[in-house]
Length: 236
Image 1: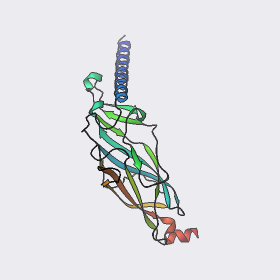
Image 2: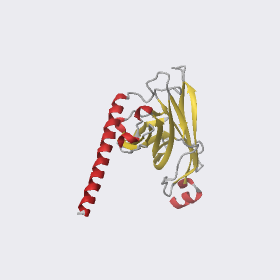
Image 3: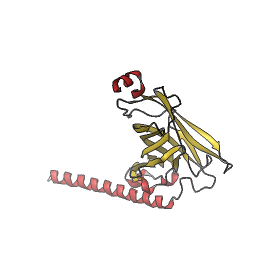
Image 4: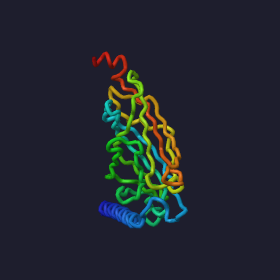
């Protein structure tokens, strides 16, 4: 009998926890429907977004067009008080996953892209915390111009410029998570090596508008081992 009671208690607890999670998910989706822009409803309000690039792989490099195709995780971290909740009202739950399609995310574009520029995999979940903090890390495919100024060198620089297409710095303030690109998960194989990297936030005024627009300027110094003396000897 005691065993049956214990099992019933556990099942009740699990059911209650499930109901609380569903209740919170429904609440967050309702909030998301009312949020039409990433910036606050206050006309003078602004949103700070922390950005970082986590390089995964160099898919291809076309030396004729000098275009590099690479994949990476692009992390966005910001706070939106409209999504905040009191954990006590939801069984102590302090974070939840919600499909990225429900959330208004930073409208980041690749400013110096080639061909298809940057494609973002939107079929992911974002993590929302009870404080209103939101973390989204979509997979991105980036095609960027990476000119080789010295045809005999085995290293070259690849620049990636990311920024908001619609919002000025006063509306969407971009900050960097790190001063470098995360390459801990990079798989360059035998050919590619990231020698060094940098990540900086810059502000620029364009002819169209009086406001300043922020961007993340990333520079990758890449070594192509097939162009080293050993690589040339091996593949000759």
